[in-house]
Length: 140
Image (cartoon, rainbow, N blue to C red; front, side):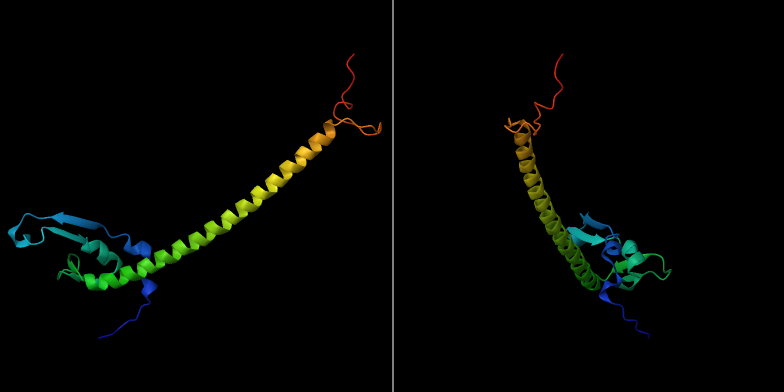
């Protein structure tokens, strides 16, 4: 028997998300103790991770999923998802910092513009200085 080692990241989060989770409510006496069964569609899991699915002799139809092995893959997928969340949180913090800097710049520019407007509209005792009111053409 040949054993192939694969890193836990071999099965990606997106690949595992391709499997459809199901809830099945049964009324059979065989399931009276646990009438709600939850699982995945074995063929969908088998398309992504055939190693954890038991197949019919025809190799096409799935019989069952080994959930103990699926759990290990889901733990790795959760780790991948958490890493993505942490990266997004870092990006959000960096963008928030950039926004705060831009807001501070905008506030400073608004103050400077107010000073310039005040200076333009203030009467000046120096005849060489044009103000907004003096630079207007005279009415005829």
